[in-house]
Image (cartoon, rainbow, N blue to C red):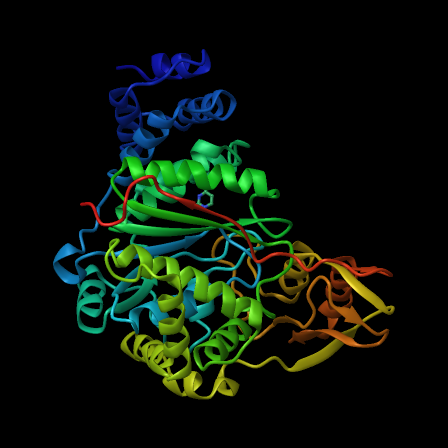
Length: 445
Ligand code: URA
């Protein structure tokens, strides 16, 4: 085969065969296709799109470009979750121990922050000593012994995606539905998941700005998973305002611990209960945990009786983290400067723009501008109001946690842009917009 023929075929809007896609991905992974031809291919896909079976074939080719983890000998059925990225989204820190505490093992590989959305690894690293670089053997051993492990992605996992992603980033081909969907799903499939709950965010702080575009992405990813033999559920959740209150790494760990101890912000708690419920539903393989009310009671109990918290403690301890920080979150990195940001007027909150909030935290040093940049785990913001809340002028809306006085004016400017007021009542935003189920019963191999 020749790269030029495959590029021309896609350029002309024709459907590529499985063999053509597999050949192209394999040749590019082995550096026998140059970047300029891969870039032309990506642009052709961006413009022409892909049929369902092409997207599945692209995903499987990328998933098999490196190691494919098989966890069946250590945990049997592997259930995973993936968030498309958001602001204040620390859901994994809660749902993994929560689900594991119900006797369902979880072995997850997570990523770092991308753009203004935070990453689970960065959050966990605010706990001193926590090791995100486990060897394959350690990963498998902890999954088997403790039923919970949470580390970084091995370099051998879907390496073709790493190459394509870097090229997409510089060729204006990131926002393509088949390319995003295959990128995410190739990593999930390579990480050994049998059942996957996708949390696709929609709104100002999300990759997908509208519910429709998030639904479309979710549908494509669910279809890929189903065609690849996985059990799938996707939720479309709101990301117009931050999830919970904390935005910033150590602050988000502390807030997750609050939830695991039975307290914490109501919206974030509810989000975690829903996502964990879907994970149990998949892990129950259509036989256990079919009654949503029963699942809910079980999960609420695990938060109330300390079992979910104990599982988180076990996770941190097993990966070398300082559990004293878990037992007493005031020992997590703390910012030197703590300042309020107050309401400029009385009224109803009409907007608490997640993207502007993220940029406010980013300005203080909570995120990276480029790969490898250091981040300050202590800093960030806590947001106390939600869209629809009524506030009085001068009421505290946000607390700023900073380590550098000179960053405060720019941070405040972002916060001012984030908040919108209305004189008349405003409807609260929903937490979820939709749930999309894979069209096969959970549990088939
Ligand atoms: N996350 C990914 O892993 N890939 C994309 O293309 C977009 C988000």
